[in-house]
Image 1 (cartoon, one colour):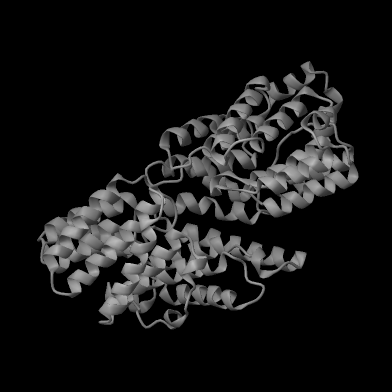
Image 2: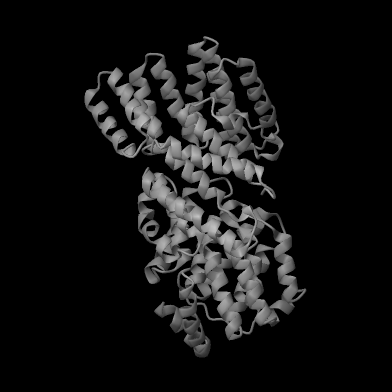
Length: 524
């Protein structure tokens, strides 16, 4: 922070810095974190801007947009308030952007870039505006993302003491990982925000972007420092309550992850009621993760109740476009983890045309497996064939690869049920090799049944426990402390006569299921 303030003094903005410091205290009162971001806006406009900025760092885009618009109402020529509103339309880690809405927000200030820059009295504000002009300029989204990354690198270099410039630069790097998690890019971003976090341990963007940077089972231990404090830095942001669960879930710390997602879900419900918004304002993302974490802990009754909450939501109106997708994900996880093929939600029809490829594949696999388990091979085959037809026109990327794996898994289950066990294992061996080549991902698994875990199950059923052990270990390397893989590992070790490994696996399963339902405890 000292270097940043020195930089501002050298720019002749002592008065603005003092204003920023005064308004920092106000921003702290909102429990959204702390940062110092001097601007040329009127005092009341700057205060609203600071709230929007902190919300923006926590991806609370709707509330941030409202705060930036409030800043505009207090000072209609406050250029940075329009910059902020435009920034709320870019969701880099979700690969979503509403460029037209962002351009409209900027045009509200002035119709041309030159006129907008004229409203920014400092070179620092002009630099931020130039960067956002790049983000929403010419070219494809991918081209603009890369151009914006270069623009933010220039801003960060020009103003090395500006911690927010450094944080947004790191975020812009993450936003260019279009093909999934690119470890090289994620570590570059982490190196930047580690320094921001050291300089200001209360900076919400620093903690947030560090968690995203380390969000896989290999790097998750590096994210523990940020994960342990982010929910305390910004407890007024529902997303900040959820994000540490990314690290805890990646490490299989299910109880801690579930507690955070419970708080995040409730915070989103409270916000919905407080702001009199529709049910779409609730965090179904946190609810999905919560259900998965309950399943891992063997709390099937609680997970069923969480799924019921999602089921009710898809029947309410107005329904958000993502409701069906979250329902499909939660139902699939419930079926896979419990193998309760008669669960009432299996009777709920979902329009596959409303789902993206990965969600459609998730539904096809889970419901297809249900059909196999119930002896309805024709139904299972139809689900498989429909998914294959959609895959034929899909682009070749990591999403398509994961969806293809679920089609392969369903095919293996069908072939196994038809009595051709060797062919089923051959399909799974090929799928396992394909899965190993994919980058690690975060959150509830996709495929919903990890490939190496299913392969281990099938090998164990085929009387090959030693090879099954290897597959379960690979599954656990990619998704630590998954309950089903841990139980499979224990059973495979027991069947192979590896008593020491079996004892280790059983002890880990007992730890995972320490608060499981009584029926789960008895069946382990």
